[in-house]
Each structure stands twice: as C-alpha cells, then as structure tokens.
Image (cartoon, rainbow, N blue to C red; front, side):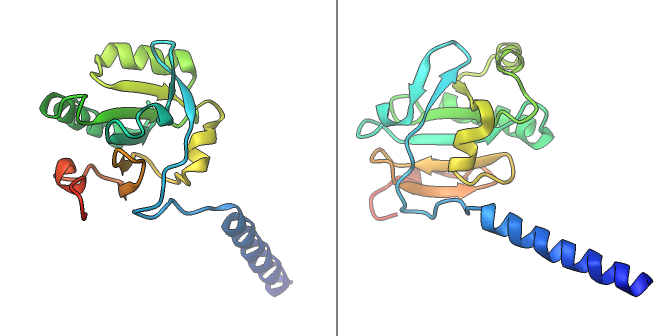
Amino acid sequence: MNLRIGKIFALFFICALLVVGAAYSPPARAADQAQNFTLKSTTGTMVSLSQFKGKQPVLLEFFATWCPHCQEMAPELAKMRKSIPDSQLAILAIDVGSRDSFEKVKRYTQDNHFPFTVLFDEGSKVSQLYGIVGIPYVTLLDKNGAIKYQGYELPSDVMSLLKPGK
C-alpha cells in the first residue's frame, strides 16, 4: 500500500510540475523589446513605459516591501539616482503587488524618501507580463525599449551597457 501511495504522490508531483511549467513564461531575453504597461505611481499619477521610448533609457526594478533583498537594493538604487541624472536614465521601481496594498507601498515610499518613481502593480499583471518569478529583479532598457540587461542584481556599470553595440 505504501508503494501505491508513493506512485500516486510521484504522479501528482509530475502533473503539478507540468502545470507550473506550462504557465511559466520566462523573462524576455536581452535585445527583445520591452512590453508597454501603465501603472499608478505612489504620487497618484499614471506612468506608461511608452512615455520614455525614444527619449531616455529606463531601469525597471521589480520589488516588494516585505522582501529583505529588495530592501538591501533600495539604497543602491538611490545612489544610482544621485550619480546618473534622470535625463540620462529613468528609474522605475515596481512593487509586484503580492501581499502589498497601494497604501502600504505609498507609506513605504514616503518613509524611505526614494528619489525615483515607485509604481504599484495591482494584481501583478505587469510582473506576470515580464515573467518575474523572483525579486528583486532588474531590467535595463535602452531609449528605444530594447532590453539590455536582466538579472537579480543591479549591473555594475549601467551606462556602459547602454552604449551602442552592447
């Protein structure tokens, strides 16, 4: 009887992996075009990725208020904001919406005095669109919307990744 339960469990586990695998869409590869989105910022304005296209590169950082690694990355983003003017790089921190409310993200942003735009992804629609499965997750886009970098850490030299031919 124990052997039968083991086989049933193994079959259930394999089926679960197949369902998860079918639902998972991997993040876009470098040089792919970023998908447009519109999200509400913690200041109440609507921000679309398309408003930056053709004007300036964009760094997207997917995070959550409860994520300790995201909290560690926040000062690095603030430091980046101080060293790279907004005219040369837009920084959009996107709360993935999981286990957070808009009001909680707004308070978190105000308490930490973030010098970059913070957006709330209600229902995690944009996070799903981008295939985000772990946070913090960073996507760097050139001014034309092409993906130049993706990863779980900030790149060491963002501006070098944005040079033509990279």
